Image (cartoon, rainbow, N blue to C red; front, side, top):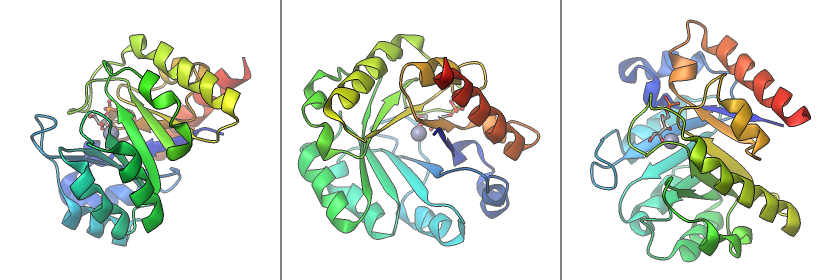
Length: 220
Ligand code: DX5
Ligand code: ZN
């Protein structure tokens, strides 16, 4: 089953409640937290995420693009986020942090930038509920999908299958109706889409289109 998680980075920040209502058919709401240090861009922090959580009908998939997630990520689990994903490149102790997130009751995710090798994490798959393979350089919406990240995804999918792991494999960046099939065929089951959903006239229709395109790719 393909999960479609619209990224509210592409929503209207002053009409967030209205835009959340437009994606009621999504699986999770993808929430991009950026700190202007780990990435050059800046979005919002825990106060905003707490309000989004309070008004959203669907659970939150928080993607932390921040330095020192060891210190800050648990707060997002504590405010009730369903899933909290931090970057491998930023965490001092990814396994300890994932265990902490799980102990608070969130799903724990680890994200890899396009240039980050997956090898060191293959033996640690049981520690995570989700691995996020970035398909663009993190920081901005509306960038082009990087097909060169697909071998990494395939490697993770093979390894997860071999180990009987139920880890979710998420892709984020440049996902739209023309790219989602490649990612699905390479083993992704969870798809983040910002501009492809909120840039469409009818976000619900865009979600349905992405779902159908991902499902079609899995069949072949
Ligand atoms: C980028 C963010 C993405 C972004 C994706 O750093 O992590 O979640 O919103 O936007 P699109 O789908 O427009 O590439
Ligand atoms: Zn993201």
